[in-house]
Length: 298
Image (cartoon, rainbow, N blue to C red; front, top):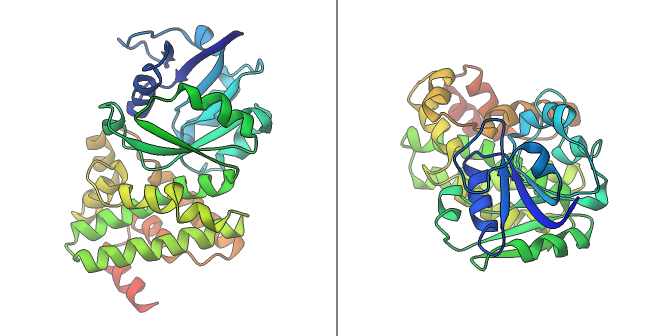
């Protein structure tokens, strides 16, 4: 293992933004499935030999990628993905637990559009881990324009990061239907309550939902066309097919599959999640107008 070296695995927009940020103070490697014309791009084996790894792979692909590619050699891992596996309903920390010890892993949360990070614009992130040593290890790598905070509430960060993408789809639908800012503010604020209720069921702390991981990331993602999930909602409100919407995006919108996971977990654990449930039903073909009527009625 190459001590005190860092690499980003995954060269999508978020992976490239993190690579840019982490390259400000030191050399940072980057790799992905396909070769990219990016400074310090290396093969997977070279990246995996680094002591510190930041993994920015879409949530639904993580389990398969880990099984096929990951070799644990004592690396410290920071997960930069947000979502819940649709097939199993497992949170990312549960999936990673099969491959990385809890003491060597952390999870990024907080409001952070890749397009702004790659411009060097200021933001704040939370590094969540049950081990403070993980935060202390990764913190020096981050540039001066990113302020980092520590939290031990991993499940709170996981729920907030996954749930806000589903709520962003709902907010995009609201915008697309021209329901007004009153409706949108009501939707987002009630969505925050819903997210917190869901998280509580799995042991998350209330404080995580009123800070950067929860309210901060939700307000950002649910209010801007820079959000892929928000744009999915706009497309659904315009009666576009999901297939066409995703083709136009050309990128992964995590909220689509995560809505399925939240819907199933809510049914299994009897959690009241009306907004997230309606998003899943709309993605399955229900009319947004009918969903609006049902939300107002129930």
